[in-house]
Image 1 (tube, rainbow, N blue to C red):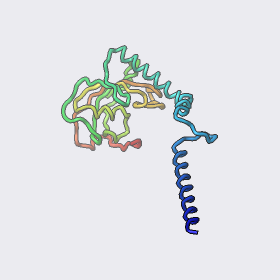
Image 2 (cartoon, one colour; image 1 turned 90 degrees about the vertical axis):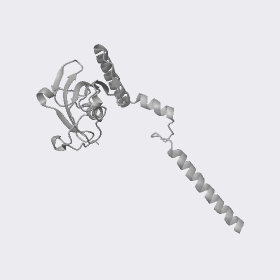
Image 3 (cartoon, rainbow, N blue to C red; image 1 turned 135 degrees about the vertical axis):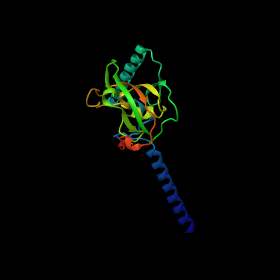
Image 4 (cartoon, rainbow, N blue to C red; image 1 turned 60 degrees about the horizontal axis):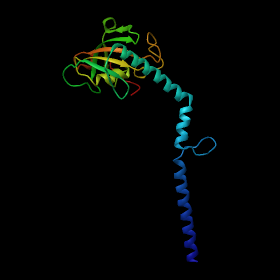
Length: 202
């Protein structure tokens, strides 16, 4: 009787372990609508044929080609950051690098890659924002953290770091890269002088 009971307990434990192992194994594989397992090579193939994925890749490819032609036209040798921002420091500035939560005031000129200047602090006033905390394009938050007070730099900005799919609703269209020349003015600890707007995207 004891042997029979022990056997039944062992069988139940074995089945439980087998069920647990099977669940863990199948949860590691994505299934398609028919329930069959999709391998990694199949997944890559599906992503390659997905029109949305391909469409995004084509847009980025065309935009990158446009940026490369622009850089070649002017003969600029610029540093490309991991995010895809192109930057060239024209004057290094002095003091400590800007960091998150630092208030920034900068003079700027914004150009289309056609060479047309569309915005300038000369007519619109300097930009003021707080690094990684204010509503400003991503490229300026990134560039500020690579620069020192008094620095002057040139930026070539892909659309996804600038005004994205929608554009700025004025003179910059959607999916349009831009070029900026910026000069960071001296640091100030008087935060009341900046437009401190919490960034909803951070």
